[in-house]
Length: 308
Image (cartoon, rainbow, N blue to C red; front, side, top):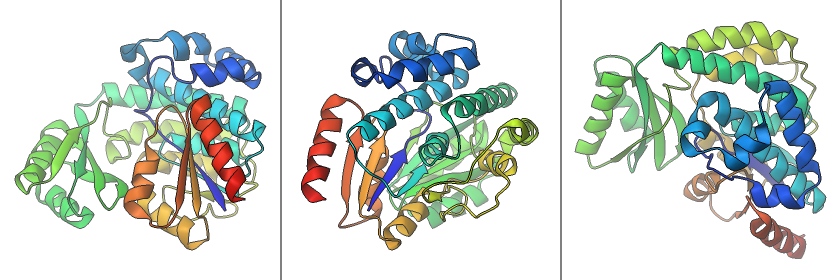
């Protein structure tokens, strides 16, 4: 069975999606819908924006979402089926769209609210995030707990990578302590300590404003970052999205649960190849493909056709 994976913030780059967009008639409608809702030229941002502009939270989130929708439409146009979806952080919104929970228009409306709320929360704090490599998640959690100040594990990406976030002094100290035990600590180019309690002001705004965003039931299982399990029936999505903003991303658990459910083919859609590395570090005996441009789409479509 095929499952779609959608990456999150940090995967953006100038010109992302340009080749697929040029060859896909549906791309124009995606850019137009986003531009109308956001109030700026989304196509120009994605195709002509520089790295600094694209890195801003208010720009990165809708730009990545648009690019992922273009990859999704390209996949659909090739007739590639999927029986489940999951996203990493921001990628959950593209996953929600892929399984029918959000229309593209409502996805852009949700991300306009989310990105602005997260951007405002980021401006009021001095915080950061590090990816910690080559250290067990349990030991990383112990180091965070022993470090003065606020720092916690927030992204459990794979057995080989965990992301920590927190107040600047605390997160720097925890990262240093990890390196002293032979781990590698990579600072992330993000504006704040995402998925930690420092984003609570953003979560409060999302909880209030997402009540106006309609969500439908998923047409295929939507695996969630919060639990690693399929979304529970009847979930209050405004509250879910608010909690998602301040809770850890349990991506490795999602992958394990997907595998246990019989998903053996993992197709990543988005600007860059990011999540397949986590799949490789977490699962064995599975197939992995990416759709980022026409060449990778063709490779995935050809291989999947031959293995159906």
